Image (cartoon, rainbow, N blue to C red; front, top):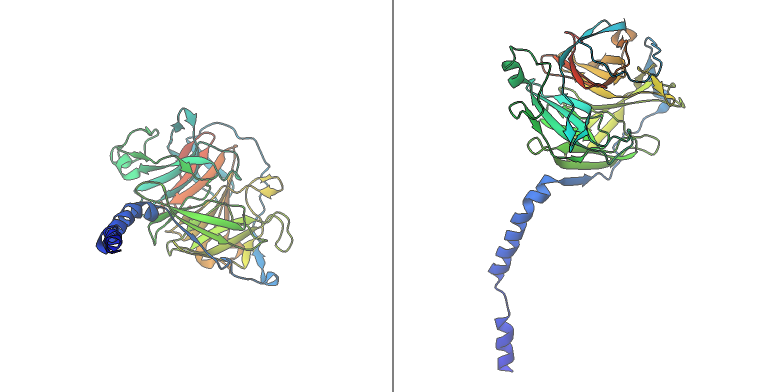
Length: 364
């Protein structure tokens, strides 16, 4: 009996050894868990609102017929109707490839200091509802490009030149019309599941260009997350939709949502004043939505569609006047993907078919 006890005691592992082993395991696991956190918000992200209190500001209704895209580039692109402005070619982003497959640019963001331009390129397209589309985040060093090109951005940029370009790994983005930079938290975000009431936003690691954080949340059964995202200089977040059926909001009007996006939670509320006429061509009964932008110098929000960009002062949302709404309509059949501005108000327009980055006019 005494020998049995000695055998049992010899099989016991010291407590200190167990603790050391667990600590070693946790240390190994930390980089993985810290690099891909996921939070699921239990409470609805959309604040309740009263439909009868909703109104719209009446703006000029520019009719832009739907069209096939024309694959041509232009050194200068002038508005033909509405607010006068001129875009000039700034640089061509070239055709990025992955394994020989061309990649399409979908959205972009600029840091407030104007140094970095980020663009999401997709290898899988499949339309706006392709949640599994893969792509790469590409960063352009605009300061270095200007410094080596007489203060201007060059017409051509070699995507493999690591002095100016950093390309991230192939990851799942979905269609990603929503890349946006939050200047308050210095972070990049995109909407990973647009078009659904149960949705999510993802934060990108600024060093690895991989997803580092996901927030799952729900709006309400009758409201789907938009395909766009923007942040103002105060850190407020925005997305917008176009009303297709016109049940309680006017048909083909713009509804704007404002809120906050953080690493653990998301909050939205409907701005109780929309814009009567959404901009851009109509396809499948609704206006084409391509992107959203924000100019911190002018404090204006931009709604991007093909051949058309509409903007309003962010600080006057909810009490807009018709004169506050600017829309520039352009000729030609180009695909506009998005606009982005640095802290000085220097803006860039991202186009597709073909791929180009164009400089916006001063004060746009």
